[in-house]
Image (cartoon, helix red, strand yellow):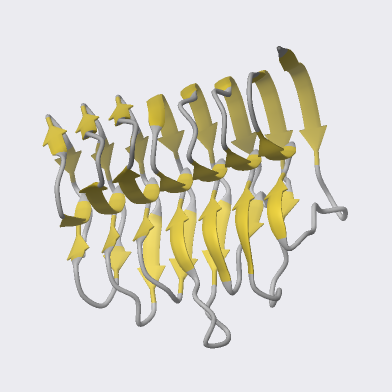
Amino acid sequence: NSTINGITITGGADAVRGKSDVGGLVGRSTNDLEIKDITLNNISVGEENQVVGSNRGGLVGIIVGTTPVSNVNISGASSEVFGDNDQYTGGLIGQMTGTGTISNCSSTATVRSAQLTTAPAAYVGGFVGLMSSGTITNGVVTGATVTSGGDYVGGFVGKVSAGASNVVITCSRSSSAVTVTNGDFVAGFAGEIAEAGGNANITSSYATGNISGNIYVGGFVGNLASGEIETNVSTTRT
């Protein structure tokens, strides 16, 4: 097992640039890496007007293995994650496909994924872009804005798609303002929730903030294809 522990990173003029699997701390996390007690201030990940890529996150571009992440804070008024012409862009994690756990983490990063060409710009979230397995407990997105020109955009997660493993999100919240131009499946918390073999369960979570999109637009969920949502609250304006 490997551990990244107790690191503080402060950005500025420098930024983390790359096409795919790009993160403020780790680009791609596999197997049993543990990440805990990390602070990232005013970080910039990705690049505006970038060629097509995938998996960009304020902390990790993509989690594939059993990575546990805890006590991570992305803060600062200039923290930002760009995923132009990209898929899977998130304030904390671009894409989460492993059976890892995320607990007590927060982000204030602005997330943007503009569709500048015919290439897709989809799966964009204030916390996670696409989540197909794993658990999130006490995830917080505050003061952030999420903008996109594509589909599946949420203040917290762009899309939940429970595959072979289950997805559980509990005690989490987002106050992101979400603005999407010509995009569908847009919401204050999750653009879409669907089950593709596993179970998707979201409990004791809420969303606030203004939401703007095309079709399948909701205060909490844009499209609930399948899955369970319990004791959740939305006070968003759509």
